[in-house]
Image 1 (cartoon, one colour):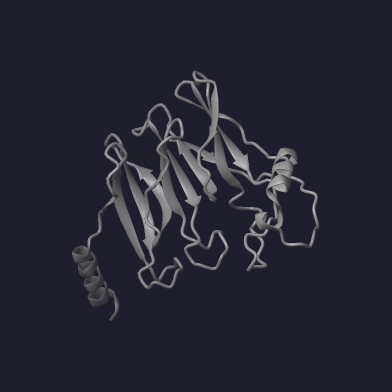
Image 2 (cartoon, one colour):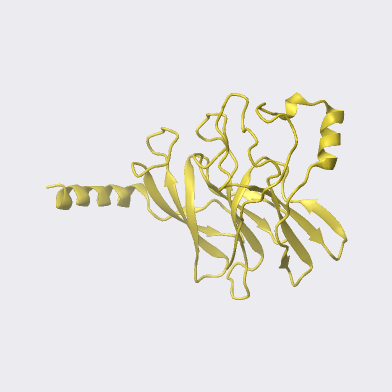
Amino acid sequence: MRYIFLLPFLALFSCQQEREMNNEDFTEDQLDSLANILTVRYGDPVELKGGEILAIPIGNFIDEWRESKKSYEYRSSEMMTDWNLLFYNRLQDSTYLLTEEKMYLTQIQTPSKESNTPDHIFYYTYAKDTDTNDVLNYKDAQQLYISNLDGSHFMQITTDNESLEYIQRSQKQNEIYIKTIIDINNDLQFTSEDLGQWYIYNVADQSAPKPIIDSTIQNKIGKLFLENWMQ
């Protein structure tokens, strides 16, 4: 697979420097006026389907935008600075966005020539405030999304109570392996105290990922560890 690492995008935004801003601070007319003058930063275009489709990363245009009225925590400028993809279909001469949902795209994987998943794009995202602190950042669960090469059928693969670590390509066509951490103690955090899991996911049928480690084998592994190593 070809890996696209989304790098930080910086932009200037003129407003009250110490004031916390939210879209609720503006009228609809003011939002329209601001949207027309904001400097949006775009990444390098990636050609898909033999150049028929272009995918262009969109960077965060306010580097230190507050994430919540209830929080004084700044988003890290070293992470999660890309929040959408712009697609251009040359044959249809149409331009559109991947999503209108709020999320950060930390990594995108597009297929290479030898890929076993030639028709799909994989996205590492922070899309939900899973720790319920009103701030969307790296402390939330990282989730896996998938789409077709033209950005259609954009959908979440991993669940909200687990955090994506990485995916690995299978030798079988249209299959990947997914490594996650499951929040088994329900503390809304993902640490070494939680449970690791591997899944098999078939992008062709798009059924739910199949866990490799079931409760029976997990129990056996736990008992062997206690018997052999906790002496």
